Length: 104
Image 1 (cartoon, helix red, strand yellow):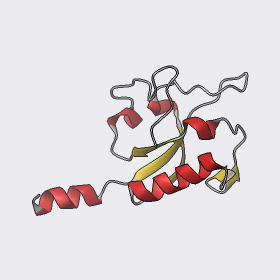
Image 2: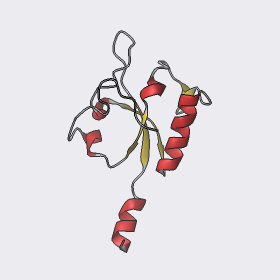
Image 3: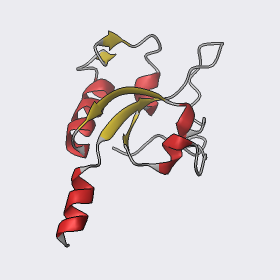
């Protein structure tokens, strides 16, 4: 890997993303990623995954310093690279296939 590739990788951060909630209170895990809410940002994927695992494991009952209004969001939350084109509406496909949870 050359220095340019290393520098490009260093600029990528990670977001802990929460799916939107429908008016009836159910989580819309099939919504396009551009519609998901950014809970917090992290410098590395490992940092984000640790918080995500804590959130799912019940160690952390909140995201971004606030209690989750819809605790079911924790089951479908995901760590997404800040340069993911789906965040800008490009390739605006659902993050999850119906019936599938994000991998850990």
